[in-house]
Length: 309
Image 1 (cartoon, one colour):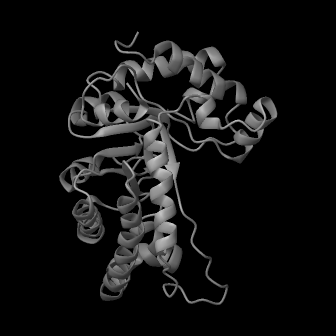
Image 2 (tube, one colour; image 1 turned 135 degrees about the horizontal axis):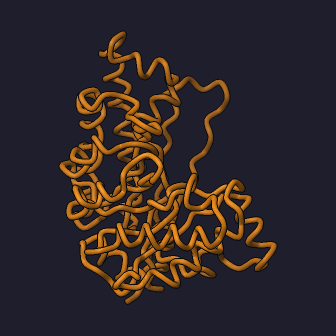
């Protein structure tokens, strides 16, 4: 199987030849990689199944009022995205968009954390206007990726803390689920076959049924320290693909031997029946020892084939 076939197979909840995987290195990890391997490509060197295409938007000036700067990619940028995605697909790789923060995250950026969380009680009409404006902007950004032909559009919102949601499920359903529904519906109208991954750090278990109902294909991050992986797989594993689950705060903090055992244990829980893309549940920073980055890849080489052993 090619990497692209492997990823699409597991998202369809079938078992491919092996478990697809990737890892997002932070700058310190990239620097260490380059010191070891020169200018080689990190994902190519470790044979990751998923690659990313992204665009950059111009920065707002310092005196620009919040909400007045909503740039979108121009046709030249969209063509560059299309060409980059097409080249990766020709190489047999699965293509994912770069991450664009979601509606709740953008509202906090514009209004501040406290004001955003208080707005449903203190200024509901104003919040509704802000969310409508943000949602339309995010649709334009995510839609550029869908139009470019990526396999996975990566949306999301950080709705979870380490042990709970940051808002009640009822508040999510009133204020943010309708925004996410508009985004998903618009992406499907652009390309019915596009896969949609939803990023959320922390504890998000109570909202997984909502995400499934919205038509989300993949839940990304799947923070092992904040949720019960076995419970997630048992309750939701036939309806949504999990991407992540290798604990950056736990599994990747031990010895290399601990990492190999921890990854293997996670694979035994999450991989059966497909519906799993293995990855650390965060971009890796210098808090994760370089030897454990290597151990993660060793574990995938040793234990990543079906049937998992």
